[in-house]
Length: 556
Ligand code: UD1
Ligand code: CA
Figure 1 (cartoon, rainbow, N blue to C red):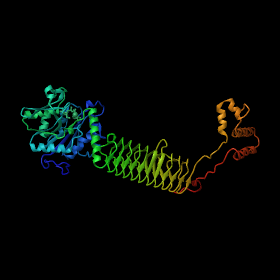
Figure 2: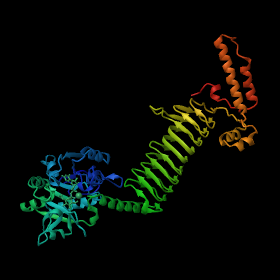
Figure 3: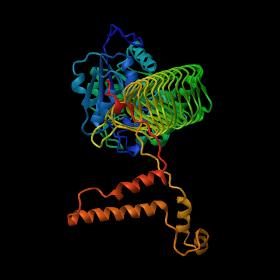
Figure 4: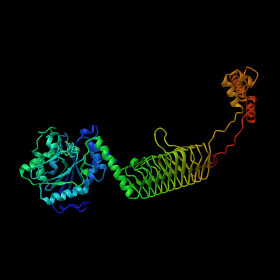
């Protein structure tokens, strides 16, 4: 027997133990195309809970019977905990729980120990309960032991039929029960411990003469009795533990109970929930003490929240790791990301997978980050998309900055150094680098590397066209009075810019004509003149600093 059992068993050094988990059924009552054991409870498939409990016993053999959606069920078993020792047995056709155990016969042939059988749809079953049941079985010297429970409403369960002296006679399924038997409140929890030899013999001799035409595993009880084998049963302390999931309503009920108990566990560990009823905390989540969690917060997957954090509310956090004193303002979504100590985020911000925020980072409203690594103290406070980017420390990403990381075929990286000022409305066309201490002017489209300490600016010079609005209003109004107000003539006054444009067209026309007819090759004097005139009058010139990179070679 293994020495690393979480739960001690008296059988250690004695009879070996095999655990058999039945998970092949579709779960007809779920009315689903998905196998029942794959339905999720507290963020994990049902089968994961049962396997966890089974593994804690460190059995010599762990056998899972799969059938419906076998591949998916196997994958779910493998992705939840160590699966190295699981042996999967295929039950191609689901002909009942007894038939499922029959399918495992080749695996159990020659196994001289006890077999603990559990069903895959009993997620709240604890390893400790299983261990004490196996202990009781060993002590009793029985060949077959049953775990039973008493339910005020036993609907749906197999009933334990006892003889006048209290000995177990058989188990009757609800569909096969007489009205009197239906009144029995002691039910079969579906957890059995059986000597392997007896089990193989008994499942070999059961038939399908019942309401469902199935091989019922429960029939091994009558077989064992007929053979004169010793039976033992044990009533469970907390019957809720062996509640099976057969319908969506039962799943939802259990989800609510589990959610409540998880939240209570974290409250007892020093976490404040402002409205526990609206918070969802998954079974694998960990929360540091003195953290406060606001309403409508979802913490899912393997999320870890540090100490002294504050989550204002309406947050969806999955697979994230938050340091200490992190403040998530209202409305954030975080998936598979890491957040350092003292980070502030939101309201309304979104971290997609692969994002890593170092200590003291600020992420503000309407900022989306994906595979973004932001150094300590860096801030992106407003309206940005930061994808496939690495940013150094104490850099400021201005409002509306976009990393253009996708060219329609592949994603490209952006690298920004330390203490950089990225001006508002900057587009960084990746792959591109901005060196430390550089500035990027507002509205710049950065298409090539910005050297450290440089200023990068790319802007179209600004033009101011005076009086344009008034003329436009007149044109659009189509109203005689307005036209009259703009000038007595019925004809609209032409804008100086329009006049110049017409002149230019005339000039171009003339020179083209000249070229066509083989006129003089020199430029007409009139072509340059109107341009000079234009800069002097209608158009105010804006001085634009030349980007430093255009003067100096790029340093790497
Ligand atoms: C079963 C018991 C019932 C007990 C109840 C406890 C039988 C006949 N009845 O009823 O006495 O009170 O559990 O929860 O055993 N499975 C297979 N292959 C199959 C059929 C089922 O692997 O061919 C698996 C299912 O995936 C499931 C488990 O066995 O995990 C139980 O099957 P289910 O149909 O839920 O049995 P119940 O009707 O609940
Ligand atoms: Ca069931």
